[in-house]
Image (cartoon, rainbow, N blue to C red; front, side, top):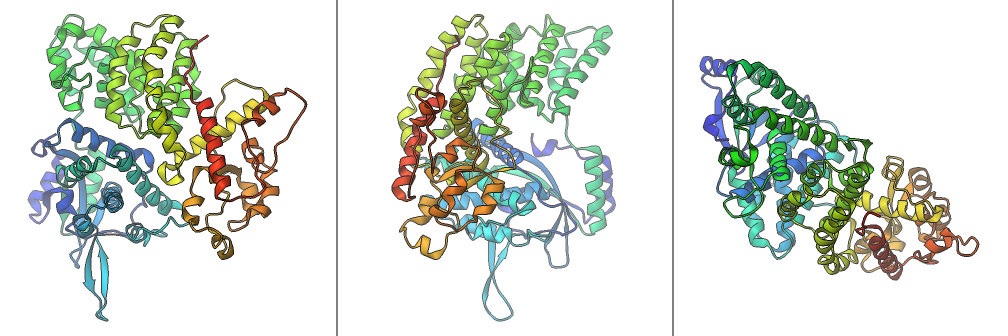
Length: 606
C-alpha cells in the first residue's frame, strides 16, 4: 500500500484542520530513530511475544524478497511531543519498541560478523555530557513502566540474559533474542552481502505515519478514534468486487452473505486475508511468477487472478469459486488451531512448538492434502513435522521451502491412495532430508541453546525425553508433548548457569560448555528448586535420579530390568556418567545426535 493511499477517519482529519500543529509525518526507520521516544509509565507494558515479533519480521522479509526496491507500510503511531522535545508514545509503542529491538539484533549480528555498526549505534543511542562533565549514553527509546526501566540498556550493552527476568522484561529479552535468531537463520555466515541489503531495506523502506500532537489530550483522542474506527481497507475487496462483476444483481445478496461468512471466519482467527489467499492459490493452482517460480507475492495476487480465469473459473462459476474458498478457509482456520477434520492433531501442535506460532507455510501442503482420509492425513502431518525439523536445524531460508511446498502441492492434489502417498514421500520428502544430513550432523554436534529459539529448544528436548519414555514403556503411540513442554518443567543446565567460582575455575571454556546441547536436559521444577543453581554434578546426581523423565534419570543411573525388555533395549542408546566434564558433555551430545536420527526419520504408511 502506498502512503498516499492511507485513509484516516474523518475525526482525525477534522482535528488536524482545527489544530494546525497536529502533524502527519512520513517516516522510515532511519528518520524515526533520529528522535528520542519515551513510553510513559501509564502505558500498557510490552506484551508482544514470539508470534507478533516473528510475523513482523517475516512480513518485512517477504516484501524484501519479492521486491527490494518497494516501500513497506506498517501502520501509524501517535505521539505527544513534551517540553523536553522527547516524543511520548501514546499509540504504537509495541511496534516501535519491537523495531528498536530489531535494530539491536542487527547490531549484535553485525558485531559477530565483523561488520561496522556505526549507523545502527547512532539509531540506538546518542552520547551526551552530564552535569559532572562525564560522557553518558542517551538511549533513543526509554521505557518508564515498572520492572523494565533499564532492560533496553542491558540489551544494547549486550550483557548476558539475566536470570531473574519476569513480565515485560522477560518478553523484551525474548523478542530481542527471537529477532536475532531470525536474522541469523535467514542470513547465515557467508551471506553478509544479502544481510546488509536486508538491513538497508529495513532501515529505509519500512515506513509508517507518525501523528504528532502539541497536547497530550489530542493524542489520546486520536488514539481512541483510531482504535474505535480503524484506518485500513479490507485487502480482499478487489477480489470481492471482481466476483460481483460476474453475477446478476439479483444474486448480490447471496454472494455478499457467503463472502461475509468467509471474512468473519478469518477475522475471528486473527488471520490476514491476503496470507490465506496466497496460500490458497499456491495449494490449489498452477502458479508461475515473472521469474518462473511457483510462488506468488501478495502484491501480485490480484493481477495473477485476473490473468488466470481459465484455471480459477470464477468468471463462469463464481459461486463455486467462493465455495472452494470457503472450504479452504474452514480447513485453514482449523489447521492453525491444531485441528483437522477429525479433531486435535498432535503433529500440527508439534509443528507449532517447533516452528513458532507465526510459521504457517506448511499449510500450503496441508490444504492440498485436505481430501486425504484420516489415516493418510495424520501420517502426512507427522512427516511434515519431521521435514520441518530438518529444515530448521539446517537454518533453511523460508523462501527455499516455500518454493518446494508450492511445487509439491500440485502433486498432492493427485494423491488418492497410501501407495501414492508413500511414493510422494520417497521421491520428494526423503531426498530433501538426505541432502541435508551431513550439514545437520555437523551443526548438531556443536549446537548450543544460543542457536535455537527457546520454544524450539524445549521442543527438541521434549521430543527426545518423550521418545525415551515411550521406548522404555514399550508404548509406541504418538502422544502430545504437553507433559514435557509445560510450566512445571524447566531446562536444566547440568554445568550450572551461574557456578561457584571454584567450579568455574576448573574449566577454561566454561561459558561455552554450559550452553551446549549436551549439557541440557529437562527437569521438573520441584526438583530443580531443591538443587540450586551453583552446585557440582556430584551433589546434583541423586536429584536427577528422582526425575520422571528417563533421559534425565539415566544421566546418573541406568536401570536394567530382565533380559530382552523394552527398557534394556532403550538403555543401549543411553549413557550414564560418574563425573561431568567436557568429554561427558561431548559424549552426551553425540548420544543425542543418534537419538535425533531415530526420532526424526521419514516413514512410509503401512
